[in-house]
Structures are given as structure tokens and as C-alpha cells.
Length: 354
Ligand SMILES: Nc1ncnc2c1ncn2[C@@H]1O[C@H](COP(=O)(O)OP(=O)(O)O)[C@@H](O)[C@H]1O
Ligand SMILES: [Mg+2]
Image 1 (cartoon, rainbow, N blue to C red):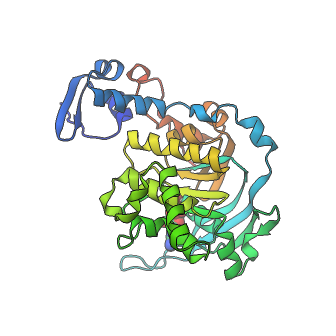
Image 2 (image 1 turned 90 degrees about the horizontal axis):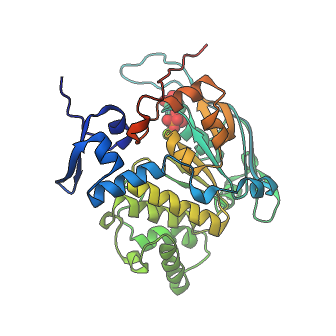
Image 3 (image 1 turned 120 degrees about the vertical axis):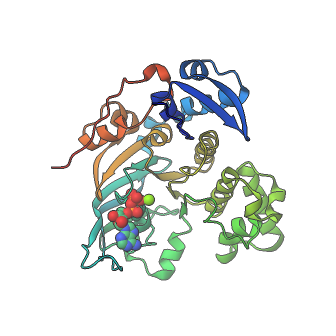
């Protein structure tokens, strides 16, 4: 049987296809046996695409030699015993459903300047965990200690509304969907400047100047401020979200599937931008992703989440090269490599609980 398999995922192509055709802007730019195209791409576009994919299969070079410095850094965030239960959902076709324990006693810590990846399949509780840490969702139990800008440590769960609003200056979120998460009625300048304006920190000409600086920091022209988000591509919109997230000079950014909707070449660029911002601004990231490959590129340490629990945690390289938990092994075995020479080396494994 012949199969025409259409996908944006180069890893899957390298893994299963015999021949590949690369399309760009409605044209077929290259066509040939997978080995030829992947190992010696002819068209500039295929070359760029394959380079980005292969680059994301290794740890980011920017991350080398960070471990020692991070070990000496103070703990920024310490979460213990965090739990969140959702009441049964009621619906037309559901009766007496069961409550979902989305986060079940999670413990983690994150140092200043560090990136911790939270990885796990869809429904494992990653988004709920991220939202509970910022108290966008209210957890039922546990503790969330945040080291503040002045060095004092705050129990985030004990904060009242005003206290939480103040803490939110220091911890911000970036979301997945660059199309849905920006208000289409606001100009880019308003989107980026809003946190500064509503917190009463800047206005008028000073605000305009700061927004210009923020846009340039994320690789956009200052003049982008006058346009609307819909005029920008997915990757550019994610840059706008990043500019907005760092406007208040936060310490912690919770990025929830922040690069999952982007094409692979754009994804690499946005990840590199985040690494660059981290160095410049001393940011810490809680980087939530279902994609263990991206976590391996981007994160210093990682935590593997399964059914509301963290089943394994450690330095990214250790977890990826010598996973201890069966679920981590299954996640890793599902990542196809874009190098056709590695085809068939990894054996798929499935994780069965209990
Ligand atoms: N608002 C909600 N109400 C009820 N159940 C929810 C709600 N949000 C998430 N859940 C459930 O909690 C579990 C974890 O979801 P989520 O945190 O979104 O996982 P992930 O981000 O890892 O995909 C899933 O079983 C999901 O169906
Ligand atoms: Mg999610």
C-alpha cells in the first residue's frame, strides 16, 4: 500500500517515510528519498528546516556550564504538597462523573535563573499546576513559597487580593495560543504597556519609550507598537506576549506550551529568544510542555508529570539519558529523531500503570 503522509513533523517523516517532498509557500521545493533530503538537502528552505529540527534534538549550547552557577543561586520558588481537585463535570451525556484530582501533592523547587521543565502527556495536570502556582486557580492544599525581589519569602497561598496582585508583578505567564491570548482590539503598544499602566508604574511618553525598548528587546521594531496583533505572524505574536510578560521585570515566568503552536524553525528562534532574555534579565522559567524534545533543548532540570503527580525529576540530561521511571522511558521512546540514520534505533514502549 502506498501512503501519502502529510505532516509538519520532520521527525515522523524521518522515521516512517521512504520519500519526502518539502513544500514552501505553495511550491514543492524538493523531492527525493528521505536519506538524501535529510542528510544533504538541496533547497535553502529544506536546509533551514532540517537544521532547526536537528538543533532542537540537542541541548541548547547556551545552557552549557550553567549547573554550577545555578547550584549557588537562592531558591526562588518552593512548592510542597500542592493539590487541586475538580468537581465532577456535569453535562448532557455525563451523569455522576468522578471528581478529578488534577494535581496530587506536587513538590518542586526552582532556583533564581533556572529553568525547570514540566513534561507529561495531555491531561496529566501541567496547566492546572502552573495556574495553581500563580493562584489563577485556587489550590485546595499545599504551600507555595516565593522569594520576592527584596529577598523576603512570601507564602503565596496566604496572600489576599492586593497581596496577590503585587506578587503577580514578579510572576507572569505566557500562553500557548499566540492568536487567542492577545486582545485583538488593543494595539501592540497597548498590549505590551498595559501591565505598566494598570500598576501605575509608567504613563505618557515614558511608557511609550519603555514599550519601544521592550519591543526591540524581543526583536521587533519599536514602530510595531502602533499596529494590531493580527498584522503579525504566530512567531511575532509570541514575541509580543514575551515583551508583555517581561514588562514588569518579573523574576518568574510560567510558560504553558509557549512554543507548541509554532512551526519548528520559528520555535527554535523563540526558544533562543527566551534563553537570551533569561541571561539578560535573570529570569527563571517554569516551562510546561508536552514535548520532551523541546524540554531537553531548553531546560536545566525537568519534572515528569503523570496523573497529577511528579514521578521523576532531575537534571535534564540525566533524566533523558538514564530515565528511572517507566513513564519517562515511554515518553522518550515516543520522540522520533529527524536523523534517518537513527531510524528504528529507539524501541517504542508503552507505560502501564500498576
Ligand atoms: N476547569 C476544569 N474543570 C474540570 N476538570 C478540569 C478542568 N481543567 C482541567 N481539568 C481536568 O484536569 C486534568 C488535568 O488537566 P490539565 O491541567 O489541563 O492537563 P495538561 O495541561 O497536562 O494537559 C484533566 O483530567 C482535565 O480534564
Ligand atoms: Mg495544558
